[in-house]
Image (cartoon, rainbow, N blue to C red; front, side, top):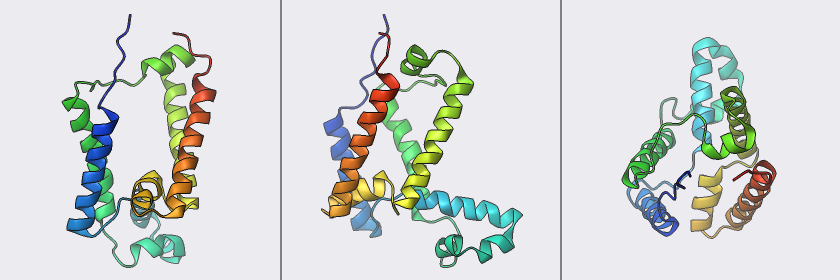
Length: 175
C-alpha cells in the first residue's frame, strides 16, 4: 500500500504566501506575477538568433524596450522553484519523480506521454495567461489581495477549470 503525500498544511501555505506577497509589496513595491517573465525570456532568447524580428515585434518590445535584462518577475519565477524545493524538503514530501503515482495509475507507465501532456498543458496555460494578460499569481494572488473584480473572477475560473480538468483526467482512477 502506497502512502499518500499530504505536503504542507494549506492554511500554513496560504499564510506564508500572504506574508511573502505583503513583503514583496512593502519591500519592492511589486505584486506577484509570473507569465510576463516567459515572454521576456522568449524575447531574450530570440534576440540572440533573430534580433531584427524582436525589434520589429511590438509585443516583445513592450517588455524589452524599457529593461532588456532579467527583472524582478524573472527572479520571482526562480524563487517559486527554490521555494517549492525548500517547502517540500521542510515537509519531507520531496522526491524526484518523472512519473507521479497518480499519473501512472490512471494513464500507464509511458514517460513520453507524461512529458508530452505536461508540455502541452503548460504551453496552453501560458497561452491562456497571456491572452488574459495575467496568470494565477498575477490575477489570482495579487488581484484577490487587492480585491479586484477581475482577480475574483479569474480565481473562480481557475478553480472551475481545475475541477473540470481533474474530473476529466482522474475520474476513472484505479485505487
